[in-house]
Length: 406
Image 1 (cartoon, rainbow, N blue to C red):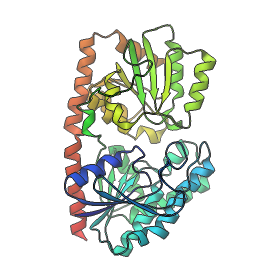
Image 2: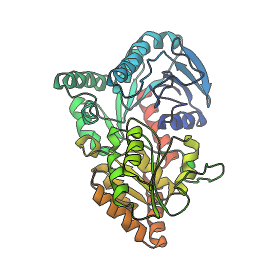
Image 3: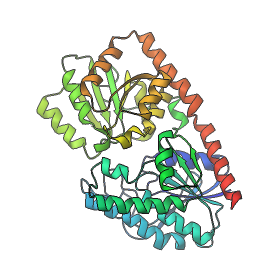
């Protein structure tokens, strides 16, 4: 089966789509990727890539086509908007030319923000008479409002109409959370919508500590590790507050691996508050994450107290469960439900620093055997509901069914 994957983000940027592409090619699929120039999260084009012009390369058996892309910059809503729109524009202008005379059975859109990236996919699908599947990772326009990028109701209304157009021109909509089904259906009446959760690479289930870097705060005492984007949506202020509340417990350390729009603010707060129990070492290669997670006593996931985030299951929840470590979930809704249902850790309300600090103390006071039980529960739940190989096989079934129905 010949699959065209369209995603604004792709390797060497660290996103789940990389694992899917690798797995699809390993299962014998003929995969091509249309993407932009890598620039996430720092906001500047990676070394080895050029701002202008199209590029073609191969990665893990897939042919990768790259269109020009305006880098997102740092802390600029305007630059971010231009970044989003540039992929749409160059995807429409350059995508058909790069893919000329190439046949595909189905187009798959990895639909994290911005969902606007599906516009070139719809156009290319129309040109090639090829069905389009969109894997909805974020709800638009709700996520734009929740993160504060756009608050103008008129603009949000316009974005909502664009999203409605995108959904209605897809042949199948996959949603990463069951709570996405209703809001997506409201914008796409009559369109087939299927729950399809995220997973993580199998390396998280059988991690190794070989060649894992030594990081201050990890490996001794009781380290609580957060891994991923350090942004507005993650409400990382709650981590700072919880660390401040627990600063008299020298064994408890918060280690934040990652960067983002709120990372520098966190660094400043560490200095201002004199927090010696909060470590911000920055980003590390994704291949080191399974081993680094094994050095943590607990793994922390946080989200802002917004309705949109209550409907989301952050993909790090699956990663944490696969790693077999107790999960501390400071969030609402679906993510908290999954952790609680799996008995994989403790869940507290979003942005509640006192509740988070108390949950950390509760885990800290548990017998090691009880913490091991929580971690084991999470891994068992992962294997039953989020197993990587099973979900890749399911995706191939969806792709094949849609390609044969047109």
